[in-house]
Image (cartoon, rainbow, N blue to C red; front, side, top):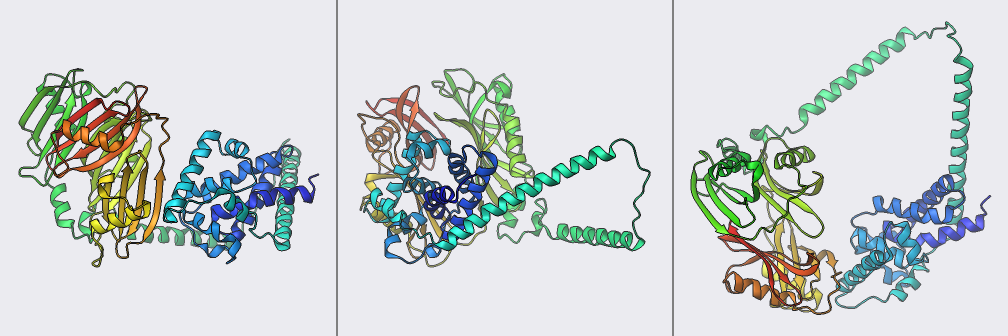
Amino acid sequence: MVSEQALLRCAKSLFPTAALCLGSLSDGRSTITEAIAAALRNSPDTWESDAIRQLIRICRFRTPTRVAPSGFPKDDTLLPLLPILNLPADSRRAIALAVSDIPTTEAAIAADLSTAELEQKIEKALRQLTFMQIGKPPVLDDLQTAAKQIPWNDTDTELLLAGIAESKEAQYAEHNTVTSREIKHIATSGKATGKTVAIPLWGMILGIAIFIALAIAVLLLWSNLPHPNAAAQTNSPHTEEVVSLFSASYISIEKAQEIAAQDIGTDAANVCFLNSKLVTDASPPHYILNFTVRPDKEYEYTLDAVSGSISSRTEYNAKMLLDTTGWLPAEEIRNAARSQTGLQDVLFLKEKRTSDSEAAYYKFELLDAYGKLYSVQIDARNAMLMKYSVEELSAKEPENIISLAQAKARALSRVGDLDLNQVIFTKRKLDGGVYLLAFTLDDGTQYLIELNAETGSINTIDIHPVSAEITEAIGLLAARDAALRMARLTEQDPVEYTKAKIDRSNGTYVYELEFQTPEYEYEVSINTSDGTIQKYRVWHR
């Protein structure tokens, strides 16, 4: 028999974590009640440690993306905790564990993490808090002190004990019900009794009427749903353009690859297509294909998108840089991209094979009949969906917005008044009324910021600190300069960066850089210690 004192002690130790994760004292209390009740039911002998695991599991699914501080009382002692509520969900869970009475090692085990992994998540959350507080770093001890002041009153105790008692009663009732059913089954399993059940006529009529009403409701609902193939029904201002694309009789991306492979005397299955792109805004529309066949040869083909005729071909020496051992066939990956996104009638605008130290995957850009552009990333070895996003091309941007230059300046000022030449921007996108900005510092720290396009205020911030153990490094900016020299470009050229990060390749840390000009795309890997270029690839856009 578990004492009330033990239940209360466990609940109070878990309460700060639950309240901060969910952003509400009442939701926090009900969640720990649920977690403790589940632990008592599933692990009566080790219920206290299991309660932590149950709480983390529940919070992992219920932590909202954003919360309002209205769920917390307006108390000066709790003010240091309010910025935590503005953190992204994963960081909020990490810092909520850090400020609780739960030992870090025990919390890491319950969260299925190593202690180092949990500490890295906590460090990331602290850096995010520093950013949101305009460079003022939080003191973890102060946050822990404030967390202990989150109020727990007699009403909370009563509701906790009542909730656990109710759970026990439900469990007892369920057990008795199952036992009763087993007894009835044994009593009647010998032979049939010969009894029949009579259903009144009015009951049959009512049942038929309900079935007909449900069928009509389903038909009405289906008739009002949008159907992807009905492009003419969409109100998108891009309808005419999209309809023309879907009626242009383009050959498929698979067919374009097959034609290129046959031209060099092999089958498409024997070719590693690195990058395939349908260019629809050119005259004539065409495919650009980059691929390798042997370890030392790379090809670039341009094909007419309608006739499939080859308009240009280039062959040059290149080091084989992509190991596709264990990759599934491209057609299987394309089918996975269709099925896992629910899209069938789509144009494959772009297909790219790539890999890093953690995964190998295909990246696709798909256009549907509504004029929506989908970015899809599929694991190359198991065909699982890794990333998925959709852009409504017809969305209208607000009229009174700050410029991109102003948005960048606002974002950098929150990091510490950095200049543009001290960072590398890898994303700069206006999406509705929000600027999405991503940039990387010289030490490899990455920032992703959502910024209100009208007011310039910061909506969200996500920081990825460097986890690599590097004792000596030339710096990302020096690596950028080396990559530009290799590409015979300068900072004055129209260069846009899409990737800038520290990664691990063949046992060494490298700077991974991807950038593009109006004509070409580049991929470069540079050793972090000595600046030697380990990978260099360039192709036409």
